[in-house]
Image (cartoon, rainbow, N blue to C red; front, side, top):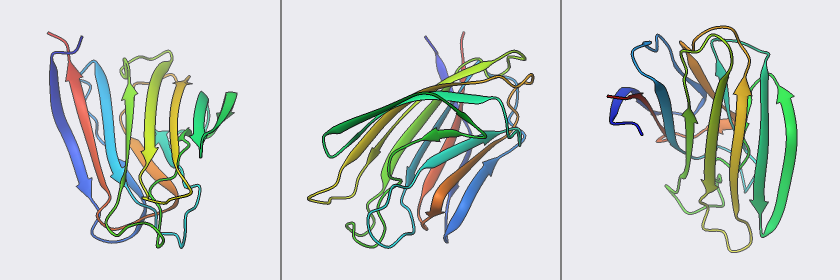
Amino acid sequence: MANTYVLIASSTLTSTSSSVTFSSIPNTFTDLHLRGNTRDNSNGFTQAYVELQVNNSSSGYSFNLIRNNNGNTVSALAQSGTIWSEQYPAGSGSTATADTFSPFEYYIANYNSTNSISWGSFGVAESNHTTTEATGITAGLWTGAAAITSIKITASNNFAAKSTFFLYGIKNA
């Protein structure tokens, strides 16, 4: 079990943004833990996704997900593509309670590997809607042949101001 969490970088948006990038990630840790609290900039409740791209790579991603929307479980196996995706609403736009944000987390194990890198994530849509709710868990793999040195976090819609992001390095003693 990890003994030490060290904050590598953080970002709080002061205006709407389509993405946040953490670059120059040091190789001095064993694992990475990315946390965020986001809200999308859409009008109404939309299915907005938090998506990750590492090292500017647009290939080698795969993931399995389980998502619950309004009590209906949706699963997708062996998804592949150009990003890792946590599929839950990234906070609702104009119809949600003001200043309500949705949490997400990614745990990226052995990010210094030059073979493949695995990750797990979860997220919860916090919208205070009476009719819509969503949660999701995802597990994935990146088969790039390099250690992770940068992470770009993108919203399928724009992230609203006050969305926050934290990247931690984890050291084992």
